[in-house]
Image 1 (cartoon, rainbow, N blue to C red):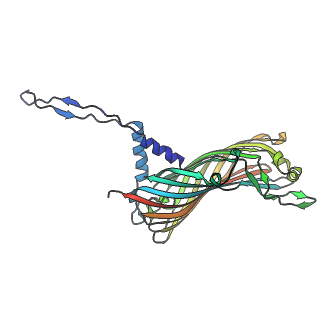
Image 2 (cartoon, one colour):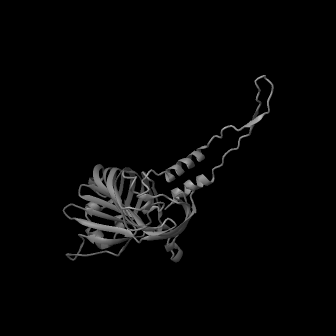
Length: 373
């Protein structure tokens, strides 16, 4: 989850400054006689890694907020234990004369990790608990990276996802056996593969009185309840491969033509604008909620069994980014839970696809190494 932060910290840790030699310059008095030589140190040049480190620390440590509303960080370092659960589900619908819906998702995956933090950046080790306690085939393994950077004014979300093939059918609508609608939920399905990459950058308007880090990175403490408008821009790329021939036989026998696609690939550009609120219901306790709808422009390519559905397509849809968290933080110790969810909606004539995924974290930690005042 924190791989980007890991790379940044490694860059900082591997930075080496070149040492320059001293140059002795003679000085002369008013009558022209030589004076004692003095040592003059040339100004050191900062290499690109040092500049990147200084820029990153400036971003993480910068604050211009009202300290009567937000308590600034008091420590440099953090030790944290975290349990993370990733989730995803896909809802595929046909909207023609024979409406149908399939909802597909794998079981949640869980990771347990120990992290060391420095200036809000974390490096650590985590393990997939499913792989520790049960045997899974390599083709079922996922690749997932979720990175969320929370600054005073600017924030960033990044995700990189490659699914496995261990999906299950969770819900069905519009499928009949012997004239009666039948529910096929719970059956295994290995014919869906999804690839997705995305980046979201946003600005926090009321940053003098509202703190995202207080709710989601535990580096500050919100002292008085406040809300803020949030606005940003996003880019993402999605690739879906769907093999309907691997569906259970009763579903295949009833499957509408609109759902017999093999591949959908689309790029999403959106402008998002929403509202976030931090509620301090007891001293050192915080409940946070944020909802950010997005107006999205999508360009796509679809391949289907029927040539009538093989087309390029452009559309405007509504996406969503949601956040929620509850945390106790007295600046020395903290504990809580948080979640970030992304919802992408894709529409064509007589067909739609909803992609919902995210991460839930439960954590406990200790801050140490008090900052100089």
